[in-house]
Amino acid sequence: MKKVIFYLVTVFSLLLPVDLLALSGDLSINCNTTSVKPGQQIKCSVSGNSDGQISMVFANISANGSISIDKFRAERIWDVKTEWPNLSLSSNDKKPGVFEIGTVYLKANSAGTGNFVMSGITFTGDSGETVSVANKSVSISVISDNPNPTPTPEPEPEPAPVVKSSDSSLKSLTVSSGSIDFIPSTLEYNLEVSSNVSTIQIQAVPNDTKATVKLPDKLSLETGLNTFAIVVTAEDGSTTTYKINVNKLENIISENALLSSLNISGKQINFSSDVFEYKIGNITTSKLDINATAIDGNAKIKIFGNNNIGKDGVIIIRVTAEAGNYKDYILYVNKLL
Image (cartoon, rainbow, N blue to C red; front, side, top):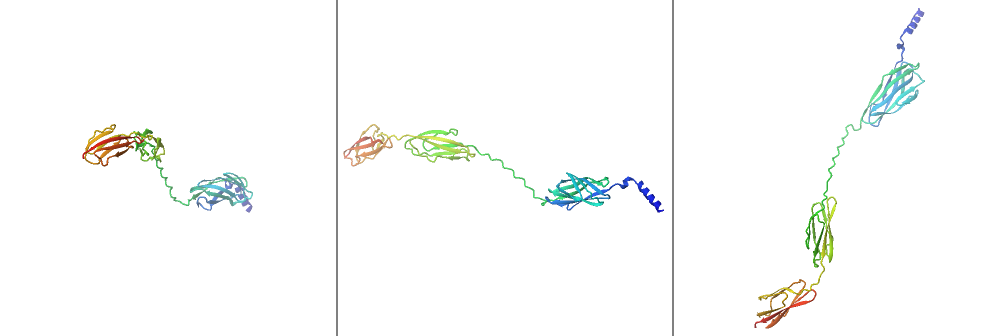
């Protein structure tokens, strides 16, 4: 009876479909953490299990988003043949059940989410049979040290460039001696002063209040030509120079010894500069009140004989020119006794 049963079991086994004897397997990924900060490392262990003896493992490994693959380290039982990102492992140590494949080291790059994915997974058994395993993935969260960073303020808009004035003209230009017909666009002026003018004062007013004016340090006059420069500097640094040429006349010594006027208090005389003798009658005082003015301001006037006038007195009014020559104006005085 036992022989019959054994025979039936053997025949029944031979008649079973081939699919009931096919290789099966699965793969799992276990990471030490799924939440890290930028710059930290994630360590993921990869293992498989099968009801048969596995001699080869093939898979494609990748990472996306905020993480990247740093390196892969296989267990010692495996010979590694890798053409990244394809992973190919083979082993002579064939064991059924759970087996360790290796460790994948991931790197957290920036805040956000990333996925570690193993796809195209295939196990090959000892007899060459293969089994395809479903894709596996692990999601990793990369959390910033400052999850709510202070927003960077928008830069202040640059102020509009300030346009500086280029006006370096004068509004007015005046001098203390002589006169000039000032026109802002005319940059040079000529004037003449007498020999007795020793200095000159210059007043210059800029057309633009933001412009500056530099006058000459020395304003004294020498005989002959004297040139003075007035420099006007605009707000933007541009300049305009005005020039004043002052011709100081030579000091000519005058020989003019004539009077321009002669007045005697209480007496009427018919005076003329080129008449040098006059008669004055009916004088009752011993001294006349005489007022004489020379034509040349540099001439000197002296009066002789005007003290204690006698009956027939003579008064001399001497005008001495700057050159030293002189003229005498004579008054013949008749005094009443």
